[in-house]
Amino acid sequence: MGKLLVTVDHQFIRTPDGKVWVKTIYGYDFWKRYLKVFDEVRIACRISDVPSLNEEMMISSGTNVEFFQLPHYRGPKEFVLRYWKIRKAMVGIADGCSCALYRIPSPIANAVHNEVKKKQLPWAVEVVNDPWDTFAPGAYKGISRPFVRIYFYCQVRFMAGNADGVSYVTRSALQKRYPSYVKRHKENHMHFESFYSSIILDKDFFYYDRKVPHNQFTIVHINSCITDYSKGHDVVIRVLNILRKNGMNVYVKFIGDGPMRSEFQRMALSYEVAEYIEFTGLLSGSQAIRQELLGSDVLVFPTKGEGLPRTVIEAMAVGLPCLSTPVNGIPELLPAECLFSQQDDKAFAKKVWDILTTPSLYQRLSKQNLETAASYEYDVLAARRDIFYKKLSDLGEK
Image (cartoon, rainbow, N blue to C red; front, top):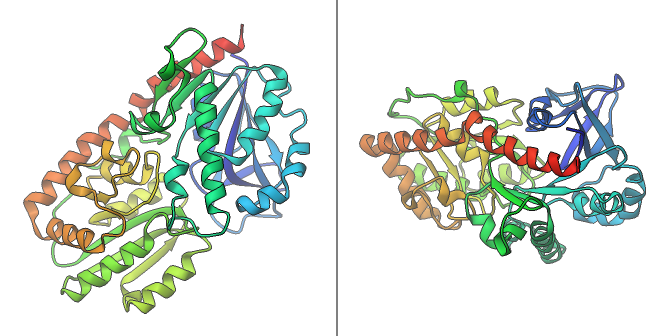
């Protein structure tokens, strides 16, 4: 069983009572997947200490979960500037652990790995995103973009190719670009591979009674942290402009928050559609997101790079027709008729129009999405995860 060291490239906050909080995804329930196999879990992550909470957040700390605080940084530039401070903070990070798992790409994973190698611990990776597409031209702005893209591409290639165990969020897309040791040789008792999504999708999240909308329509888009153009907020704004100009009574709901929100609000003003757009801010917890999805009619998610987006899977699970781009694992979720080039505003707009004005098409896509989403239900994925973690745990006991 033992103690598992996990690296997470996410920002957490800690209140004076010692509790650790997070805005999205990594609540205490997330760590339970590891605790099913391991006795304890140590989370290596960025933590900021605050006097109190000023917004709704999820509790991340809990029984048998400890946090190893790393210095806070934001973005590649700050990470580079604080690199040696971060490295110094990692002394002892692997003490008492039986094995390690890195969720990559992640800037801290390489630094943590240096400590793990000193202890000669078995290690595995969960490949959750594709940095080659995420940091492609136009998706991420800044002079560091080419360096960041190559750095993380090489990181994932190296770690996937050398780890004892590798799991991907896709069935085949990420495996082709970042092959594991198993792919290059074959599986054995020391090297193993799996695939499963990170999503927590319980049975009660699904919704099977979606009705065809009429007269007034809502497009929804979800991106928890709005930091750049990679998730296609600008595309959705232009699509809305096209649809409104053609007489459709349609609105947009952006779920999420971040430093780029104000820029997209200004863009909405320039396209004269600001009054038809709602920025909900960040929503905490899957049920809050589910309620917004239930009140929407179609998901438009023109992303430039993903692993396997939970946004799309959650929308599919409540019967929403979904439009996105043919990148990474998304073609494993959606049919070709619902995938378009990220910058093809007219194609997205036409398909939204067709879906919202053709009841038979709406019903067909809604049904297909529910059937596909069923394969990502929690119990289905948990079985594969448990086997993967057990193999890693067994290596740690040898």
